[in-house]
Length: 574
Image (tube, rainbow, N blue to C red; front, side):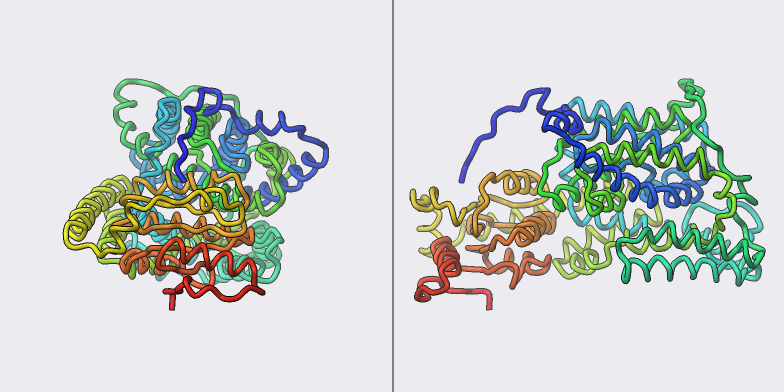
């Protein structure tokens, strides 16, 4: 199946999804669903936004400013129907380091500059290149950030009082925490554990309940009722404001711009990666397709607006976006309403925030860090191949002990070198003595009956399938308009496949199985089949066959269970 897409126009690329939705006869029932989803997401976003802001070294109200202003503009201009914008845990490390080095004014300036960079990336249509970040690099830096976030919460989890300011680097931080252990507070630890147990328990037994808000409310009530001697938002910050401040520009000078420029570049890089990952998650849950460059323009505008109102970095947030989808959202109106609900909370219930114990918010972020770590993906990559494991571990360790930008650059460079090595091996293999079956298959075109079969769609992938091509292939697979009963994915002409490509195939398989579509993978040789299986592409979700004809025969046999089994369909996935 070879198709050449028409060149999209500027309007096709940059029309916000809100405009698209409103042109599709958006009705009262849709609005009602968006109201419920927006309220649900706001309930999640309120405690999380404050916790992320505090962990980032700023006051909790700045996290709420970010959720309100940033969330509003992300949804208003987004290239995704379901994206929820706001402060994200992935930014905690970068924001805290920027505040420590340049103060809050420097942070706001860096946020504004990162917004301008994101606008440029989007309008120059460079969003496609963000998708070239290899899967092991993404998992590595995400896990590294999770470790750093958890380490930053140990102080409040245990109620410690450090002799000086908390160091930013991991090893000095752990040393300072160790020296402060004699100041350990049992009530603080008890409140933190109460929050963690409540969140985890509700997620398991009552997944539709607002576990984060319930946990923080229970911890606040316990702290007030028993008069526990632990820090709260009120004792450390004096509470939060009742609404948004007036917008104002940060202090801008050439020296200041040059000083915060590295931080702004890091914000823009991480923000683009996180927002597009979040949009992809929403796509996988709904079957929709986002507009990547439009999404980056929305993120850029949101960061500029957030900075004007004193907020911090904005990006698409995976957990809140997934909550939005699961809550039944129909359009970007849900994200806009979520921002308005957070604003309503600030106007009405701001005094109650003073009673929230910091240990409860630390417990909340501990759960966030645990969920961010992608433990299963980390373990799969360690087993996938030595090359992928090297990229993963290098990115992970450099993110923890050096910085995020270094981790991404080194990880990407190692992945590129690994790709060149694998390609060299693939060329050596193909220049040897291929079997007659391989030669025949390479030169045999699909016949007309295959191309016109409405029940079974055959999709052939040719060439090296690696992180640079994974986004293109995934988009092509998702754009197949028909709804067949089975897919046959032929990889006989794929000499090399990496973890990013395997993850793309696994995502397509997962979505297809939810739609009740059977998947048959054909022509996968030993290395390709092993990588696919390592990443979850295995029975019973898929079946592996030796060639396309065998896969098609098996698909038709499965569609007609009463028919005689076809001998030509030789199953090789034993």
